[in-house]
Length: 256
Image (tube, rainbow, N blue to C red):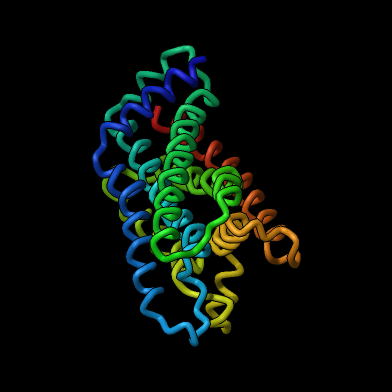
């Protein structure tokens, strides 16, 4: 109950931030439109499918989730800098109440972000005369929750360790790196070489692959198409969440 009250407060804080609407909701839609226009200008003979709306929808959603990480970090650092969390430590709230209070509203934002992004994808698909699988889009709202959880946990870690001035800058590096190394806007496996090897050593590309496979309901292919990416994504979410809770609890005791 205490966690839900704290989560409600945090969601209200997020809803008052105009930048949250711009980066978490509007920006992914803009990227969908821009990349769809780029796709229409590419000759069909090139065989380029990464910007096709079914592949683009899942990739752009992962791109949008990186901004949820950013706003998680900002929320935590703002609360720490204002001593708001220190005052709450005198209440009966426990460590799990604090972490759940940050995680739950961000997961709700993730679901809203997914719904809006996929609604925009359906409109674009209708315009470019491409049939998207609505069942796949609906399923992807849930299959991308582990990747959202991973990014939220990373935001929790940065928000716990950094201050309100440095956290946004560091998170921006992860936004750029996660987007590039996640193969959101380029075919990492098609490029191959060292770049592909680096991408496969990090969880971002697996988040993107799982999202794209889910949108297309591509579960019957090879182990690498969905099952492996999903296993890596869920495992990464679990590890980062455990680390995030540990770092947050330890830092709060230190600040206290």
